[in-house]
Image (cartoon, rainbow, N blue to C red; front, side):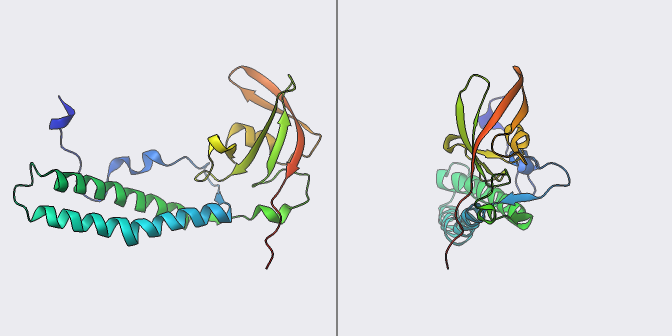
Length: 188
């Protein structure tokens, strides 16, 4: 059947709400940097205070225009409201369980903990620099990896000069930790 003729689920409890949630290891906390927490909180407040009221206004206006079955503003607005509500639920859940960990507390340390920026080399001498961040804030394009990723798990607790083993689809790799950095503590 053509997707255009299928009915989208209405209401508050969409079954796919948790499909987009990156999985947390059972029994673990949702670690976040203070900056990541603030970014998610700002997004939540922007959705609640600005975007959702604006879309509600458009839907309300469109509903007054008669036939809703062919009213693009109404149909798009209702769909967008469901997306916004889903994102609000996601952000609320994640912020409720967030454990904010300030990486600057480890400034000057050579051991790898959450928030570290690590430069390592593989057996071929290829160097890579990553920053270990929270699940909801890691951005691979910026060289950030989640603390639950295989490479981060292999590196955690290691020190500069240590070699760690990383299981990859291509087999076991040995990584040498070259440098560990943390942001400087904020002044003030």
